[in-house]
Image 1 (cartoon, rainbow, N blue to C red):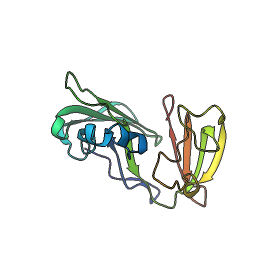
Image 2: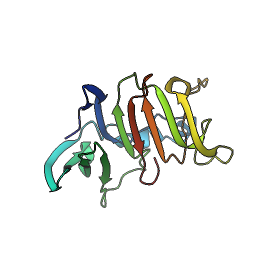
Image 3: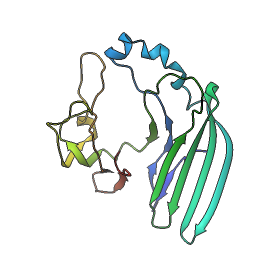
Length: 190
């Protein structure tokens, strides 16, 4: 139920994913409020998912819809991945979760993880920057177009903390030394 590869003209762009992700590395404040223990159910929810249905539809020429319904880990919460694939090479990916009335702790993160080849190490984005910024600390980071090497986006904090985030991203591109790569866009933001 997961895309395992994206190849174009013999070049591999995605080597795994995207797959649902509900966890993030805990930081100092999280340990203080016991988040790692309290929210532990979300840590492995994605890895232990079970495919319940897989549907493919072709609503128009040059367009394919793939819908995968999962049950997540021990929670048995429904999650749906939808891929709308166009003949142009564009793919719109969405994830939807329905916790219903389940009594669960807060979800540390709602997103997707994917793997790309290491050669796509040049990053360009339209959003806040150029330095790291967060939803509660971003007013000095202005919206613009910025570029960086992927290795330069993090900061070696003494103790692990949230690191390298840029907010209000409209789109980002990941390219290799030759300028070949892919673009990821948010609807509206990443």
